[in-house]
Image (cartoon, rainbow over the protein chains, first blue to last red):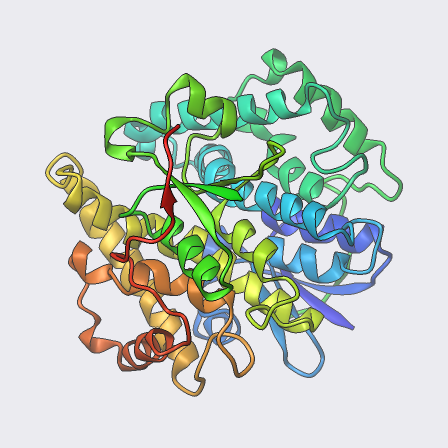
Length: 207
Length: 207
């Protein structure tokens, strides 16, 4: 069985839990507490030298890091990633947008809140909020005449962007001005096999 | 003919120029001067609401943003991207690493240097340098027993990471301690059809 190195509160890790659940792929789960520095232990660094979760490990020791690369790997040959080369490129466009222009603002501000690091980072807050709101406005404009990010069906581009958008309010972002985003969040939640970020899935194993 | 919205000094844009040259795909080139704010004009924002280069535009008006999504699109069905699903996922792993853990440190510090914004950002320099050196050390360890990032041949994962690594010294990074990275830079330069970041390719057109 595959093993997911995971942290419940991480949206990047939640992306993988969500897709594996929708694909009905069973997995063992190893809890890696970022707040306790568990991504920086010698034993974890041997698995992922870039000290992040999520990480997927196969029984033969192979590993794959980077949440969006993991989504792409498991979604190939499934309904969650179109075969068409143009649609695949569009899905990747939105997933790179997510990691470069969305996650570093929206996820990071939420992290400051729940990790108690908001005061320490107060000087950066205005810039991060502004950039986060810009990312949300780009999403809202794109979704104004579409049901999903790519083509006309739910894909890993939606999973990728849903992960931190649906909890953006935990970082103080006001989603009420983004009507198309809010409607899209509802559509994502209605997909077959959807799980919440708080759903405790996967068989727990030690490390 | 396709049109590339481009900025000579951008490593992200150079990735696309390099791959298009190696694939012998002709393109028109529109110069977008980031330093003059040309990614934020109303006419450019209609093409790319996320105000960045590179952007590729087709004669029918279709556009594709995000350098690594553009690489993936053009490399499909070429020698520069393996067909194998596992190797594709590994290529994407390194390309997401590049956009999340490498470019925001190494490219950004170089940008501060050449745009005259180093003093303004002096307070962030130590953190960015530390994170940039960490990314280089992850690359160096991976390359210690490999010729290229994925499988045994040159791919878009190499193009992606080459773009800002080979000019990292312009941002003050000392590459002399990364012997495997330096050997790999040489191997990338020796690939058929390689062009330099300073090579002036593409037929210039106005906008």
